[in-house]
Length: 227
Image (tube, rainbow, N blue to C red; front, side, top):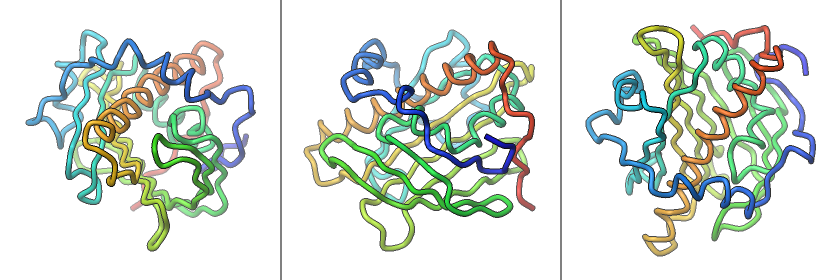
């Protein structure tokens, strides 16, 4: 793929994971430690508590869009620039977010994109939707990749990835928030589905960055933060 702001294209079929493979891959992290409530709004504040390599998680009854949301955070052993260049390539997300089977960018402009996603989520089942994507930066160095269903779309899926460098600059804090649009299921099922999906996404992002760095294939162009 080229070095567009939002890269286009579907992931090769061989890179997709089945639901069973995803469940097996996340079994070891089902009992992830809780994400500190006081650190909810500050990815940088999480760096010290995640230094041992764990992935911490938290379930929010009223999270993104005031809907049930799974939130997970972990450190990626790579500089912020490399992580940014990798995770702003939206064509990668079908191999990162467990509920997404394929994703294609259909339009883009500076800092924004529209993507077509085919996927399957627990309880929700198969879905075919369009998500609006945006990249934002703020004053403390945190950047946010935000993907959400357009107005009136169904189901109401929302994915938010927040990235911030550690003080040393050698590692990157990644916080993933997922609202899967399955608020009508029993609380216990919804909690597990949201939290496990967020944990699995952080773990997949770590693997993706590590693999690209090892192969010397980190994208060369950094996504520009919109004015």
